[in-house]
Length: 535
Ligand code: NOJ
Image 1: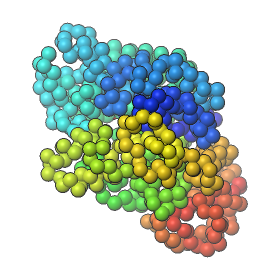
Image 2 (image 1 turned 90 degrees about the vertical axis):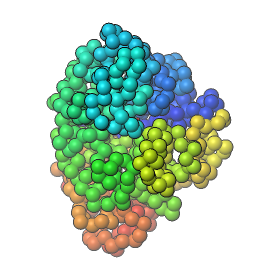
Image 3 (image 1 turned 180 degrees about the horizontal axis):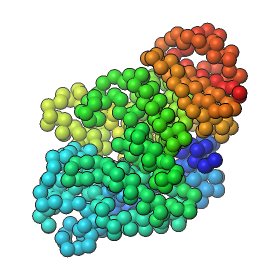
Image 4 (image 1 turned 30 degrees about the vertical axis):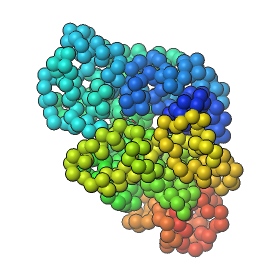
């Protein structure tokens, strides 16, 4: 079986992970200090968000040199040391590949913007005037004026992140060169930033299209063929129809891709990310059902609740006060029980929560630009702040809470972003001392994936389909069966048939309450149970 089907990936956002030199910014030295922590958790692969040279307009997703390490994070020697340390413990490392765009400080763009005749001019997308009214993800038009050439260039993110012109063969060759350079260094693959956008058609404001598949196949041939590496595409526009195209092994594109449909359900459709409604469990269940079925034996799913762009999952779908531990475990169990490769975002394993900062403490360019745009559009400050508290990316970017000492043991200096003040109660050191912690539960989830084939091969059948409180499903193979039953609410609820399930199955593989009460048809707040039987 492909190793990545039994793997669990842990995402590190280095700026906020651990600072080793007291400048307030997490770094490679900090990751090296914590390699044994990662080993203890039991994860198989680390995904590192960008650490390349960058002016940090978008925290490193704006790269000015793909072949250099940003001095804020350390040196190439330290990078190599980190890679060796991970490898010596059997942990793989994948890097972030950000090639939909570069920084405006990349040498290519510097040349491109000053001279129409430079070969680098065509590395980017230029027009004499803004030809569409398309808006960028970080507010404002996608078209930005460039005085030197009297033209407009295209940028889907900030104006300091000009989009590369993937239709130019030279661009693609340069990208394949840098991919091979890093793979030759011994890394184990890539997470590919907004990779479906390389198939866009700016003239028609079309964000993705057939071309992304063509280019990914070309990339596969040029870089991945014959190497045992792992690739996961961030494909914001992937659907249950297109995801199998990206991840079907025969098509030779990607190992898997991230679908985001399950994380867009509290948005009012068509109004963007900030206009919110209540999440309906039934909608969430349907999305998972469709994705699970669409990819079964036709591709491969990636399973994730959070990343550096998403709010903290216990605050979002669980309960971050009374039932933080129960709901954190329940969410982990529901996700890890499905088919696909699970991703744990740093801090999720200790149940870190969202923050509510005063506006001036937010650092994220998306949030800062959005406030201006929504104020101009007449939104009340109350509605804007509610959006930030619920969806702002800085929720996930506050530093990891290592212990209860000053700055949570993250840094001896001044942290680049404020800490979540709850670090005195929620931190790694205390968590590791507790027997029934979320950390301990995640360790068990990872172990179950290794020990039980059913987790990777079983099909998926949604149960209690109409019930708006219960998330339950069965996974079946020819020899084993698994059943997950979870209460998505903070109330005790009725769960008809639970006591029968309990007798029908051989045993409980994992549950988030210690005292077994499944003799009654009742689920306690956020209770989740994973039953197992061999056939
Ligand atoms: C997706 C990344 O995850 C996000 O953090 C970044 O801002 C955009 N892509 C642009 O690179």
